[in-house]
Length: 315
Ligand SMILES: [Zn+2]
Image (cartoon, rainbow, N blue to C red; front, side, top):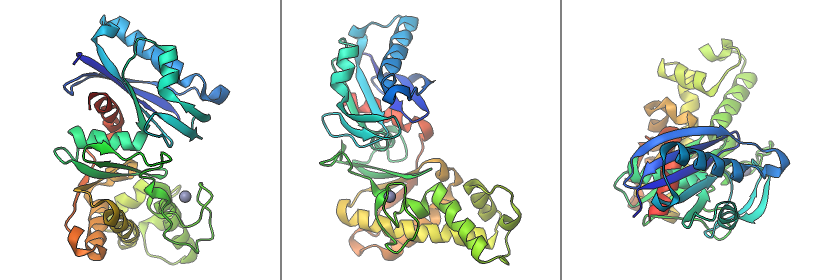
């Protein structure tokens, strides 16, 4: 095994990069802006330029680099073909082929969906360390899902394995999800969803006793903070989120039966006050054979993606 590897986590606004020792030590991380213009055609060249600049700075040659792992915010098949990535303006193309054309020295290039990569990172050195199967759920603007079984990521036939945010839980929902469907899990249980549901309740019930009623420009963090301070209405909103998400995860468990669920994403910064209701309702609704699945908060934060990316080239 060569001594170094790079993890590249491509997001809609920033590309996060990490230089690792191949035994798992993160030596340095940095980020560059994602240039989305011209249908995202600068994204890969920019990322590789940044890798080359770092190698020059540290005096590392390609013969010392094991490979490059990459996470992208969209569906990816096992051979690294991205199937349209709306956030980046990408259509359908094979990423390893494109990378090798840009940098022929890279022999080992692995690509996956960003949340799948984050799940692998958490399984390797984070909240799911030591397990061999995990489902990662990220609660942010949307809901991301990443599934690892037997240390292997589940890509799915169309690259959409783990897209649990678009499980339909309320078919009669009048508002459309950004995917075009109605009643998707992420419409209720993402940070955006929590805020939407809470605002709607305050609008429909003007007399509700809560500090949130007087909070200007309400955020999901305000709701979690109020819950932590004992605000009964804020607590009821987290309870409702936990009920919906916990129940949806029983369906995931009925399919995958993972050892552990890892909850990450911006909303997970709320910590135990968010995790407790999810876990409570999961156990309440779960089939007895998977009622005791572990739950944990993600531990690697924004770095989970780069850890998982580099892990891909090692396995
Ligand atoms: Zn949806």
